[in-house]
Amino acid sequence: MAEAKQLTADQIIEEYGYDDHFHEHHDEDKYQSSFITHYIFSQDHKMIAKQFLITGMFWAFVGGLMSLIFRLQLGFPEADLAWLRPFMGKWIILNDAGIGTLSPEFYYALVTMHGTILVFFVLTAGLSGTFSNLLIPLQIGARDMASPLLNMLSYWFFFLAGVIMFLSLFLSTGPFAGGWVAYPPLSALPQASSGSGAGMTMWLVSLVFFVVSVLLGGINYITTVLNLRTKGLGMWRLPLTIWAFFVTAVLGLLSFPVLVSGFLLLMFDRSLGTSFYLSEIFIGGQALDHVGGSPILYQHLFWFLGHPEVYIIILPAMGIVSEVLSVHARKPIFGYKAMVFSILAIGILSFIVWAHHMFMSGVNPFLANFFILFTLIIAVPSAVKVFNWIATIYGGKMRFNSASLYAIGFVSMFISGGLTGIFLGNAAIDIQMHDTYFVVAHFHIVMGVAAFFGMFAGIYHWYPKLYGRFMNETLGKIHFWGTLIGAYVIFWPMHYIGIAGVPRRYYSFDYFDTFAQFSDLNAFITVGAILTFAFQLVFVINFFMSIWRGRKQETRNPWGATTLEWTTPIDRIHGNWPHKIPTVQRWAYDYYKDDREYVSQITPLEEGEKTDGLH
Image (cartoon, rainbow, N blue to C red; front, side, top):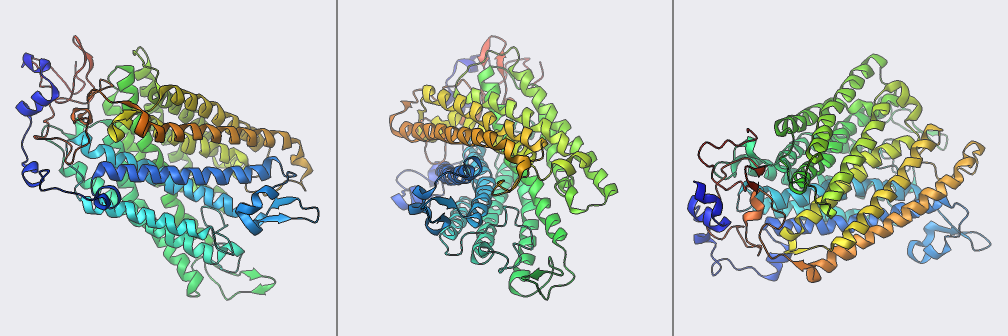
């Protein structure tokens, strides 16, 4: 088959692919779509990926804007915020001199909404929803998802969840303000605070719809990967992106229903007078008729989802980074099977470490030792991945473009944030650090910023598959350096003030002389946050401008990649391939093999040639 390497992708697919007779039933004259069915209620996985992405970008903008407002309060507590009153109304309080300050109640609402939006709507739906939808069918050689209808419903349940959450911002009593983790009793008693009433109810309803979206998507992703892989594509030939999306979907299916069960009991306590989470509560000196419940039960139910959620967010980014680094380093991924086993190990271990979030809740110290042990053990597969990424980069012919820079930046962020997690995984240290800014710095770097870096790497890399054009590289690099430097400017100082004991969640430190010395550092962090947000506007301009004015994709495989999505036509057609579906002949990472820079997965093996990483 030596002549196969001289053939074009179309010729190889025509000769070695297989005919599923798809276009006999979906020919252009038979398959017609209107504006509504093509752009709005689309069942095409590529369009649904765009819907998830742009909706996620909207929520990232909203959540980021909220963080700027409460950072203004923390960094410049004496500043006049009256200019925000036309937008925020009564939540900006004017004193007799006309000086405006942020309402304490709305400060906590902003912190709550920021966490909820970024964790669920952006880094779960926006990241996994976008790239699972875009890449799973394309990289496994499928026409679409197993159920296009469920795929469409998954997006619209997410959209509905977003609408409900957005409307809660305009309630006269304000949105929920009890923290994104929604601990009782603030979440269980409507009278506990202004945001605990209708705002909390809408928060709960929104997240239940969000969980429905996650479950519909997860079932679809798992079924598609297991049942619709093209001929020759065994599990050990899957790109690491697909392994990551697959395990992420499994984690979501197993953990999100537990969160809903916790929410259901919370609704009972709020509406039916039960006492699952409440006991011996006094409000205004008046005892309530709640006895026998425990708020610790809610914490167990929440964090049983909460810690797998960390990996639901970060695993897709890990898969994306693995693919982007290998493509742009022009090297096979180092230790493919170790990378797969580390993904599986992270998925399994993520279910037995949740109580490390609860060392301050009175957990038995002997029981805490179990969670300390497995918290430290879960760092091992993560370290394997870091080592393999560095080994992939080492000695490679790295192309330093926007996608690869963000992939390298992800590795930097993951190392930085992961190392601080070792401190917090130890109960003795965590008891001192838990309610400080050290924790804020840790999880924002390792889960928030790192996941965003993986997401940006994927957007810059697969933008041609989304829109048939490239994003502007100059703007992309400006965006990268501004975001990288800005992220460290914001979160590294937080480690320092956290070690010094500065507590998180406080609206003001005016009455704490101990923390007055950090006011300049808080102002520095706030300025860094404003500048970093400004660099995200560079990305938004680049993204939307490139849809119409970006450099056009001239060849099918502009990056010289090996995976199946780059064998599809430049025009994003219904069914992905115009005729036959390609047959996979080899693993996904044949770079600089023999005398060839890269060898596509569809290229047949030559006589005596080994594949699947064996040389």
